[in-house]
Image 1: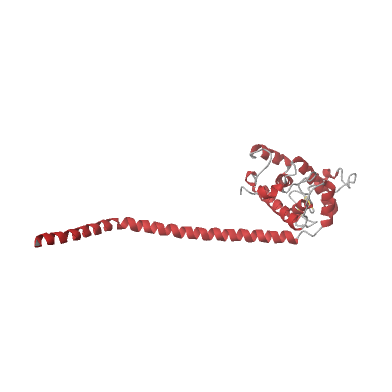
Image 2 (image 1 turned 60 degrees about the vertical axis):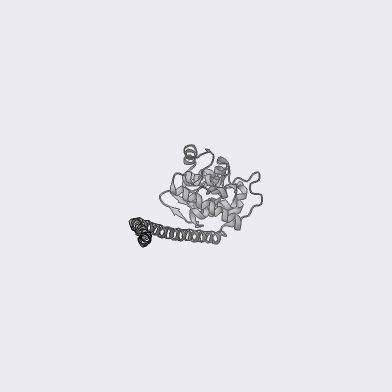
Length: 250
């Protein structure tokens, strides 16, 4: 009986030693797995912190931009509203173009293109004086610095682009920046429906950034300076319906 009892007591010890040996055999695997898990958690925390910082920077940049827009809308409001009304475009959109073209500086000039004045009209834009209050007058390059002449011609050109692109704020901004011939090609080559352009479908970074800023400014001006309950009704050439959806694919 004693031998049997000793034998019976030794069996659990052998099993325990075997279990210890198995755990030791797996120890390296467990350690490696634990280290990898810890590293993954650390990387996730670092990545989350960076994304949070980047989002905070973007939010602050957007807030700063909105403050800038809000502060720079009172200049030349009479001219903006006068010629927006005359040519059937939204005054908020003219204000957005002026902000992003010249920051409301009537003497703004870009030597590489010859762009002048509030709406940065190039000399060839003088052809759009036809049908305006200045039709028949000989317009010089220097005249393009005159705020009234500049906004009058610029508003007429916006109307032409609005007619061409169905009042789409994104397309009009792209055409104003890059020219309608380029926009026509982009619609053919890159647009999913060949009628509109999402931001991701605009192939050049400079025009993409410009269009985004114009549409953002347009939305801010509509909200704070130029509310229009009739927006979207017949005769409104720049429809705000595309504002909300324009950047949905970002």
